[in-house]
Amino acid sequence: MILPIDPTNKLSFKRFIKDGDLIIVYERHDTMKAVKVSKDGVLQNRFGSFKHSE
Image (cartoon, rainbow, N blue to C red; front, side, top):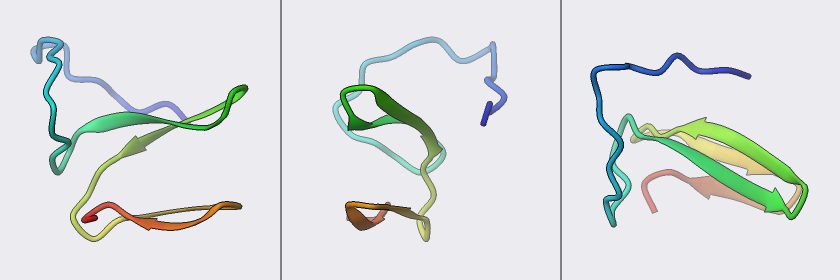
């Protein structure tokens, strides 16, 4: 899955993830997934369900 990136946004290294951020989830050392964070979103994988709000 490829998500569009806004070229007007500059890279930043914030300590807190907020609604609308694109993050990379490392499920294993060889498996990554791009996730766009949303207030009511949930990441589900074989390790469980993870609410974006937590």
